[in-house]
Image 1 (tube, rainbow, N blue to C red):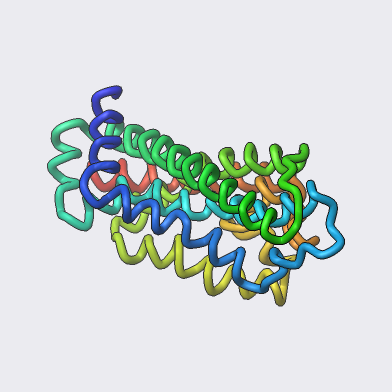
Image 2: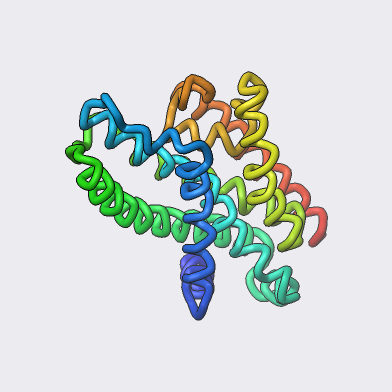
Length: 242
């Protein structure tokens, strides 16, 4: 199993894969930051609150992590090499190895984004005449974003195994959140808050703008989504190789 995980990690960070994964991972937080301009409205906020407001889009790296986690699976289906992998290591080891490797790459990518985003936030706040202060809520957001990244990567990997198609998976994990989930968040938040992408984001940004779930409900719903999809992916994969 260790050899499978090591192999998947090397594949994920080799060549231009690193750049592609990073660009995709930063897409959703940037979209959230720029979507309505509210994160730049810092007038009258205490330093800790202003800092948290600029950092909150990092919670959406959990959605990006879903695509990163799926990449270990969909890449092989895209290049037609999955059958060789399954013959070489077996379905059980391939399934578990790809999920674990995807989660590790997702967490590593999220950590890099958090560091770079934090540095940029400090510069932005200084230019706006604010102090950069990491309060308890900001540290909780960092922790929640990383937990969300792990669950997101597992969820994304499961969807990759279910669809077995790079483009369908990308549409589900990237296009769907950007179009459907964000639209529902504005028009029907009582429905949107239970969608998989937004429960992942709520782990890092609980009750975001009064529209997302609180931390514990979000974590519970995220575990149900992730566990259910991983179970479906396992069952589907076992039937396919039987």
